[in-house]
Amino acid sequence: MTSVFRDEHWIGGAFVPPESAERIGVENPYTEEVFGHVPAGTAEDVNLAVSAARAAFDGWAATPPAERGAALGRLHRALAARADEIARIVGLELGTPLKIAKAVQAGLPLTVLAGYAELAAQPPAEETIGNSLVVHEPAGVVGAITPWNYPLHQVVAKVGAALAAGCTVVLKPSELTPLTAYLLADAFAEAQLPPGVFNMVTGTGPAVGAAIAGHPDVDVVSFTGSTVTGRAISRAAADRIAKVSLELGGKSANVILEDADLIKAVKVGVGNAFLNSGQTCTAWTRMLVHRSHYDEAVELAAKTAAAYTVGDPFDPATRLGPLASAAQRERVRGFIERATARLVAGGLDAPVPSTGHFVAPTIFADVDPDSEIAQEEIFGPVLSIIPFGSDDEAVAIANNSKYGLAGAVWGSDERALAVARRLRTGAVDVNGGSFNPFAPFGGYKQSGVGRELGAYGLAEFQQVKAIQR
Picture 1: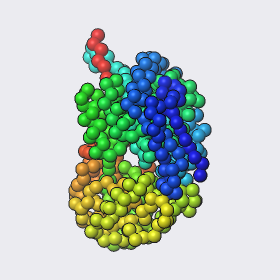
Picture 2 (picture 1 turned 135 degrees about the horizontal axis):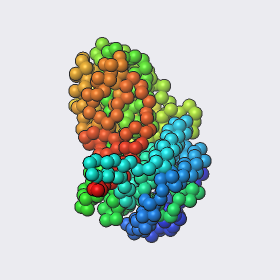
Picture 3 (picture 1 turned 135 degrees about the vertical axis):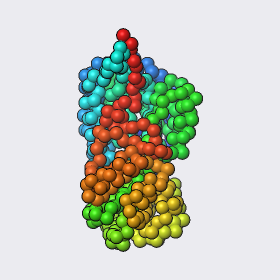
């Protein structure tokens, strides 16, 4: 295994040494070996990065849209040239199986960035309302704080949108998966965007994340991660009334109506719940099945789970890699241990590799909708199956959650669409509708505030001004 050591932050258009000599080790969750490190950033590093972003803001905000679009196009080409390396590094620091890493961890952010290059090239929208000209302007310096589960996609969703809007950025990637973000910094160096437009400081949440969230010169804070941390960031930003965009947890329901294609709905539903070893905020971790097909669905789900081979992320036969860390593994195992529902697949005694942070793909049936495993975000390969008797009951169970990020409905088209409209969640897939990287993405309730992706994501980094004439 190749070691990867990065010893500098990216600030003001160059790699610069950190204020502290302290380093954070990066572990391979499959081998449990530390194979790299990054700087443990400090508030002083954040100050330098924010100062660079502030100095670059006026020039970048005034850059004509066509030039901004061309700059993001160069960035996209530089990042696309690193696609194979992105997949490899994600496999090493997160444990995502290589096939999935190539398609999702590397492929999706490239698609999103290409979309923002196009949006950046378009003149900002203007509207006339009576004697007022309504214009959209860049919001300022953006502090982006991103998670470990999709380490490049979550970064690009924020950085691409902010830059397209004319903002400048200070990024803190997750300390669990920071090496992927360095490939983005390398792409910025190659693409030669103006110095200070993009800056990156690595480090922990309490040191770097808190410094960004509370910094007086950061105009917008965009965070993806846990609801608990999202609350803390909101409080830090509230002291100066800074805008906050949050993409937080989820406990999404997959509703399978009595007239659904049961085999397809169950197979796709299990795959969605186990994607990225269940470490996906939009995972459909509650499968709601009409009682007329319930027993068959449970049996189908258990058989589907049995085909999810766990192991080496670089083995083509592997469908489920390790969890990101020992702490995450123990957290997931705790949910499984406390569960009182009927275990139909996996569990704590199921065989997994002796090395690595593995949890076997696990399914519980006859789950109480109010129980812990049906209410809390587990963030691991654990699926709860819940019966229902009517469409109204299915909607009530699906909406019985503090979260509202994603979901799915399967059934005859009109009926499924009617149920989808009633779900209190930010996105719903009907009969296997594919993910749209240009549609608005975000949640209701404790799943967050604001939207990412496409034009709605760009709008999060703009201010609206009325000019009376």
